[in-house]
Image 1 (tube, rainbow, N blue to C red):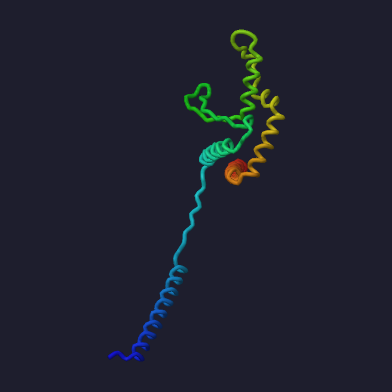
Image 2 (spheres, one colour):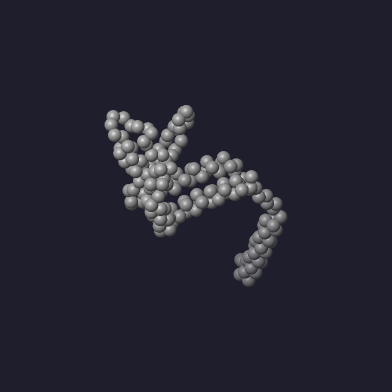
Length: 172
């Protein structure tokens, strides 16, 4: 026959022993954590790696911007172009209003058959002639960045990369 008093006392002793063991294991585990050596490694990207990361982030930002933007003239159009004398295509982007203005200037500068290359506006001329629209576009982008959290995050990443590249220029 089992003595309930003896059995109850045995259960209490077992429970107390279990608690004591659990507490000692927990203390030992905490002590082990304190004794573990930690090593931190900080990697630093090279300037070309930073520039590549900047370009990647810029294209991601522009893609997100175009998906949010509802004003067609402020869309940014990107395409791959091979510079003269090179077989390596590079992605270049410009706002739709600049492309449209350039096309209009080319149409108005061609008076007959063919295009007179001497009468075509330079990029500096186009930049000057679209100055007001460019300022309006900057304000439009700023408003979208301020009101769309995802666009703000993307812009913040882009700005951080830009700051690191500029800091490298100053350090060298």
